[in-house]
Length: 281
Ligand SMILES: [Mg+2]
Image 1: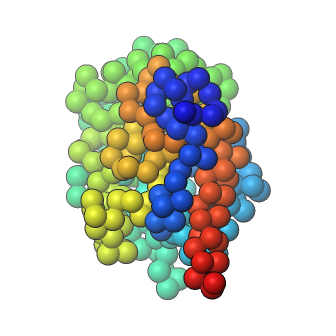
Image 2 (image 1 turned 180 degrees about the vertical axis):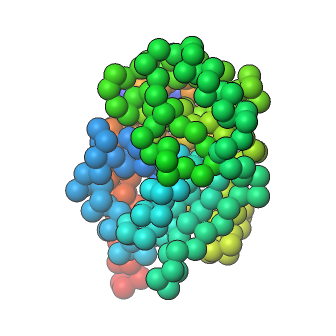
């Protein structure tokens, strides 16, 4: 039975402390959302950043998977202690190799100057009072992002859902994160880009190697990954979205944001250490 909250019981999520040592010791990759999963109230805490370094130092490969823009992902791939980053909801993967920035673009990714996106933008501005484009829109290649909760005034999740339905009715893809509604043309998602990147970069095999990774997220735009991989976890932030979620992760932390991510990192790191101790003995 879950130890952390009644929501866990309703949704079937277990406390992260219930992950078995067999499950934890098989993990080679930590895939993680960024906003409100690694960050707390918009900031990357020292606790979360330290957890990223500790995982890297223990030989665990960390790969952020985000709706953030190509411009942000260039910085993340070059400067963070990660093995790569999937950006714009699966349009591409960036990574650094021998000091060079490398990339794979999803074959279905279509540039964000498409007329359908212009039409959606006009309809959203006409219909949703107070809505604005995300400030990182200038650094985006494939999607448009509406900011409903990154800056003030924060709009409701209902407003975000309204934007999503305008986009879907116009024939686009749309996902709601904790801060943005991302809208794009072309059939790609975080799962297919993640699998393509892992196979190309690490000779990872879909299905057979699924239990080598854990995905950590917090909100409705993480659902495709929650649905696809067996080892998935959410930071406690997810409770805010429970009425919008159809697919819950297997595990949930007790804390929100970066403190929740650190809980998961601790469990993975303890299992790496216990395997090392067994090998020494
Ligand atoms: Mg998020």
